[in-house]
Amino acid sequence: MSTLRHSLLAWTLLLGFASCATPAEPPQLPNIVIIYADDLGYGDVSSYGATTIQTPHIDRLAADGLRFSRAHAPSATCTPSRYAMLTGEYPWRQRGTGVARGNASLIIDPNRTTLADIMKQAGYATGVVGKWHLGLGGPEGPDWNGTITPGPLELGFDEAFLIPATGDRVPTVYVRDHLVEGFDAADPIEVSFDSLVGSEPTGKDRPDLLKMHPSHGHDMTIVNGISRIGWMQGGQAARWVDEDMADVIAGEAVSFIERHQDQPFFLYFSTHDIHVPRVAHNRFAGKSGMGPRGDVILQLDWTVGHVLDALDRLGLSDNTIVLFSSDNGPVVDDGYQDQAVELLGNHTPSGPLRGGKYSAFEAGTRVPFILRWPNRVTPATSSALVSQIDLMASLASLAVIPLEAGVGPDSQNLLPALMGESPAGRAQLVTQSVSGTLALIDGDWKYIPPNDRPPFNTLTATELGNAPEPQLYNLAEDAGERANRAAEFPERVASMAARLASSADAP
Image 1 (tube, helix red, strand yellow):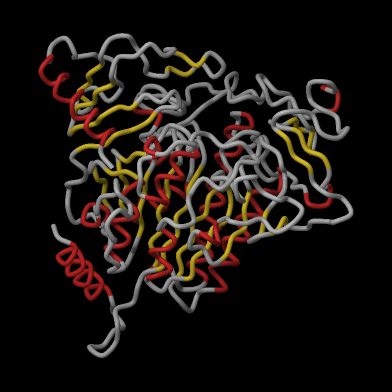
Image 2 (cartoon, rainbow, N blue to C red):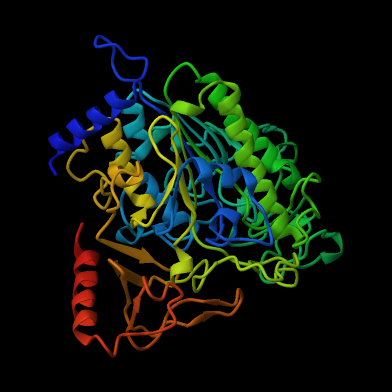
């Protein structure tokens, strides 16, 4: 379909829902809120089959919107998925898009067009709140004691309130726009991932100071009784309190919505939950019966409800697209002794799928994906194959912004599928594991090429999907990827191997 036909279709959709518009008025764009969870598995929420734990607010989205059963994050880890969603480009096409250090330089070139740029061009107020993990600053990395640039504001966002990397990495401070929030020049911040800085205690040397102990790694500078990845000195007044993090960033998200309620807004709200360290507020601590991992699932669900309640209170719900998903699949033990394994019980974070975070198997990238838009979308379940990488082309089409050549090169316009108006999604999709293994999904079939990489992550006990022989699965019959059909269908294996190689060579 040509760009012109895309634009005409998008205008038709917009005219259809602009209930207050007259012939002389332009159609009213919907607000857009992306709620992006961290490490949440396909089976971690009750609307996707969880029974041990209940997630009523996420379920409320599913009941009122479109629940996708075959939606994927672009990668089985966080940084590359975020990169792909914002750029519309497979992350493995660019070097340096692996899991970023806490002091990494900005990974996305400020000269390239991002999803936020598209939304801004369409007239949206644009904001990002929460986990960033795409690097900050120029080639030398961020200046934590000065102006931190480039960053989200150079990528199309009007406002930013960030967890710079992850909760388990230093620096343990928030960044608002270009500055560390609460920074005190008399207590400068120093960060290193190469060698010890300063004299603050570490988890390795002072385990007696810890309220949560590491299971592997995570034994460097102690902040708030938790040792992290990396060393940090200074910035005492600016440091976050883990137990308050969900409240802080949810409050910032709602504040952004309140400030921009009278104009179209685009909010990328990236939660920290349920990533490690899993430290729930007292309202949720001990409430799940599954330990901290279960408690932060409850906290995540509250966060979703807090945003939905704000939209209701402001009368914005009907004309707001809320899209909920996760950056990759689940992991149980990811570096801290938080009883996640011992208290898992009958709960299966991956649901019927195989693998998890880091894996080439389905549970590495197939994640919850729910879209609610009461003005347009009829509640249903969709089996369309979709990816977060397609948000750029799809939302650009919705906003009637033609993409220039080279922008979002791997993003496909799946607007009819996302609106529930077509059962057809992607024909093919390439996914990526942490070890760099690429897999090709083609209709109901999935191909994982042979390789000599480790089959397991021994630290997290996750199957990585690597094997010395080719793997071929019929996902319609075998979503759990248990029956390798490669020997039965050698011609299909050869064809899919060639297509995967061709995709990897294409722009």
